[in-house]
Amino acid sequence: MPAPTCASCQAARAALRRPRSGQALCGACFCAAFEAEVLHTVQRGRLLPPGAVVAVGASGGKDSTVLAHVLRALAPRLDITLHLVAVDEGISGYRDAALAAVRSQAASWELPLTIVAYADLFGGWTMDAVARSTAGSGRSRSCCTFCGVLRRRALEEGARRVGATHIVTGHNADDMAETVLMNFLRGDAGRLARGGGLGSAGEGGALPRCRPLQLASQKEVVLYAHFRRLRYFSRECSFAPEAFRGHARQLLKLLEAARPSAVLDLVHSAERLALVPAARPPRPGTCSRCGALASRALCQACALLDGLNRGRPRLAIGKGRRGLDEELEDAGPGPESRGSGSAAAESKAIPAAPPVPLGTGEGGGRAGAWEL
Amino acid sequence: MAAPLSVEVEFGGGAELLFDGIKKHQVILPGREEPWDIRNLLVWIKKNLLKEQPELFLLGDSVRPGILVLINDADWELLGELDYQLQDQDSVLFISTLHGG
Image (cartoon, rainbow over all chains, first blue to last red):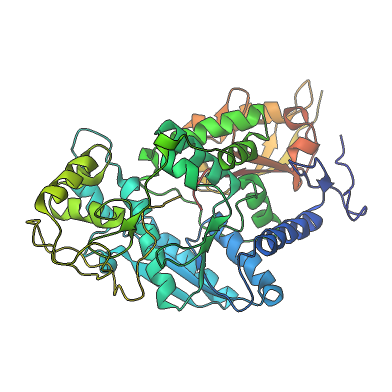
């Protein structure tokens, strides 16, 4: 059967049917609608005000490629400037190839590119090194747990280096829905409660972040890239098969096949959640080492790196985390009192390799424990 | 008896890794009693093109959820999905959406 005519221009053959409205559109009209929706998301939420210097988290992958392309098209209208910030986690055979794609994109878009590397920021701890350190424990390596926390920190650092006022990432609706499932499955009430909304305002001195594509389904992101003939890097991270997110993704895909609106419905459900009083997380303080926002004595990044440096990588993961907190409480506060905001802190109470400084520390704390 | 068909089968978004890394395949589908539809094409692809891990491309008699199918640059949803009957010179593109980005 032939495809219907585009409902918008009435001229070209329709190329797809939009999942929410059921409207059949041709490639060109779909791309225009997609861009208009991103513009609407940004404007309605006042996410990127005029004059904003926007650091775009760029991985070379489909989401950040579409994000950068769309924002670049909208930049004159929004009156914003864009800088690409790519994070080099040090994953051989994967990230080096992806970075080549980002460099090529930066050149063709004529956008400045800054690359920040784990090796430099975190005292030599590349993801390959983390994987070696956590291997052989007889359980999942939890590499991705480290990477998620450290990458957010690295992105923040890169954004500061380019003088950005805002950070944007390419998370799409499917990513958000997967995260909701993961948080439920792990009993993470704190993250469930905080994961909603279009972005974080930036607490404790962290830069405001938002996800302009978060209402776009992954399918539409891929189709947009196809119709706009955008080239992106589509190899899977070497560690991805180990990630817990893979289970959530698989479940989500099966659910979506049965009920296409499940993706956005999950996100909306999470936005409407209220926690019982006993489950509400306490007000966060600041990391005693680097000054970033933290719900415990050490922020997640410092705690993870501490575990790695002490040869006990699982120290800050899951139940092991409680052991770390108890140690710190027994040892008492270090020379800097909580909340001093000084980085490169030397906490003499903990016998360990010198703590890894997480950047200059001026200007207050950083994005802390609140990962997506 | 349906005549043989010349069809371009293309893989993208990482799906090509299951097909020796080759994105575009010009294939000749042999003549047969019934017309070729996408369902038959998938069986043919599994037998003749798929090099590894069929479970990453196929689920049951269809593609794995997360793999988009475009026929002549249009979403197969508009054209009957598995029941679409292939014509000579058609182009079928399979795009995987299953990687981080």
